[in-house]
Length: 242
Image (cartoon, rainbow, N blue to C red; front, side):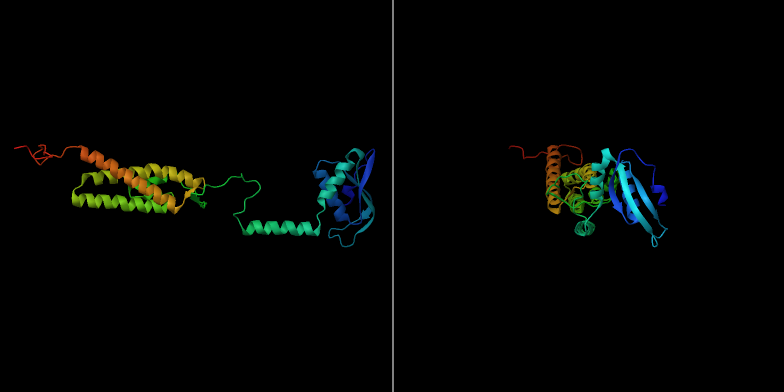
């Protein structure tokens, strides 16, 4: 083990370290070689596998003179004081306990205040088809629960009330909200996968705007068409002049 580290002598070399422990010497030698430096150990010594009965006499770490300064800097960087080791361990424990801390390799940038915490599950855009069988299902699938339940209540309410009161525009409004749920649900899925889940307040605002817009558009379209009687004759909207 130790004999393999005693390489062939190099021309014009400088001593950068002296050790009385074979394990420490070999670790320093490996560290320098991993950083692209030529290095070798010189001296006499024996070491067994467990390093319990080691006898080392004058074990030195040699490098080419041109690389001596770089080698010394590398060895200094290899040595960590007890205080530095404790600080590193503390920072590591803190990062493990608080996953919200931003890691050094992550891109910096604030998340918009209108959006909440990101869930780690990934949604697929084709999943919004659930909105065809369940009102508001597309937004429920996209993890926008408030918006989904608002659309569900609005769609069912418009259908039921429209059927009871025979208000055609309410049925049209409900149909428009179904289309909105599917179309906007795809966008909501993409935002969720990028970590931008809207807050409850944002979902309520968007939901009210969508319901009002669909209702106004449906009422405009439904009332613009003239009403017909059972025998398909136009029903006058005002009494004829006498």
